Length: 213
Length: 213
Picture 1 (cartoon, chains in turn red, orange):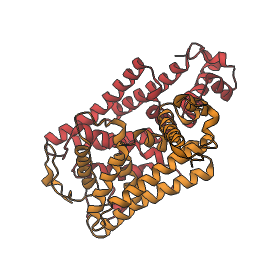
Picture 2 (cartoon, chains in turn purple, cyan; picture 1 turned 30 degrees about the horizontal axis):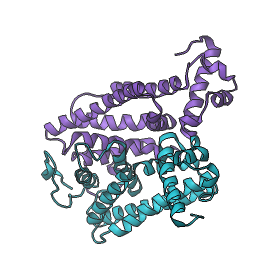
Picture 3 (cartoon, chains in turn cyan, purple; picture 1 turned 135 degrees about the vertical axis):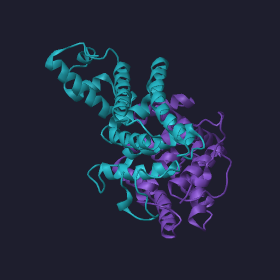
Picture 4 (cartoon, one colour; picture 1 turned 90 degrees about the horizontal axis):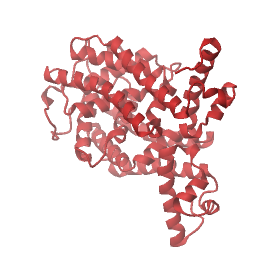
């Protein structure tokens, strides 16, 4: 998207993106003007239009790159093979990706409302492609008799909402590491689909030892 | 909160609340001025200050009443008795309450960011009281050997995120009724905590027998 090259332009664009994600997550897209963004990074508003002709171009770019990044991360993390292994990898990848991008995730989830129809459609298509991966894993697992799934669409939505929700409360410097959180969500997801966790499954009510991935 | 009584005042306040919830959900709190709210309901901006001295008073009232309504609905729905029954009632009450209040739920979840510290604390206290109900149900169920719960706090957050997420995609006029959605989420929640479902609720392709605890 950058119309300006070279290190000054690149730095400005990076600062702009970072400020945009933070300010939009904090105040909402509509309340954040290009002027406000420019002030946050110490440039003139007119300079921003070298990078993004409109504020919606900026929003759309942030949202599209977020979803494309998520899909690329999944493609790199997908182990293939049995549905149980793929589901475990899906949950872990999703949680790790999102806890590292809390503000961008808020923007991505909240500001679909701010996109014009054509771009909304493009974003929904990307989201749908990602959700389809999970639906297919669930359907394969159910077909193989590994998973109990009443409705693959609902279950996929339930799992995605559950694991995205981590960003609402999780702070990496608190009592649990992201690995511990991911392990607990792995155990919950496996039970949710009626599957055994990836390794040993201990007796009920037995704390952290059995959260092995 | 109404400083004006009588049917004109009540109608105006009701219209104001309804418009506020819709406009804030659509545009974000910061982007919705009292002037814009007044225009939406066809009164002068000055008239709104009879009902809510500040825009934040209005936001806080909407958010507080939403959470108080949720807690009251739960108190009315709580069957007492075994944790499994209470958990089933909790999930059903939560889903039914939220699908009827989609915009208010968005406002409640998104606009914590817009509250001043004291009011944020008050809201977080209400949310925490509600979450504590679920944590206690989970702990009782785990202590009774009915539930497999690694971490009651994480599990409560996971369940709440999962079941609140229904409002993101559910539209009552689509392929599923709210009862069908609630029944599927009931089955998923019971499995998530390693419990048997309450009884056989209708659901497609259920290999429910293998939902061993």
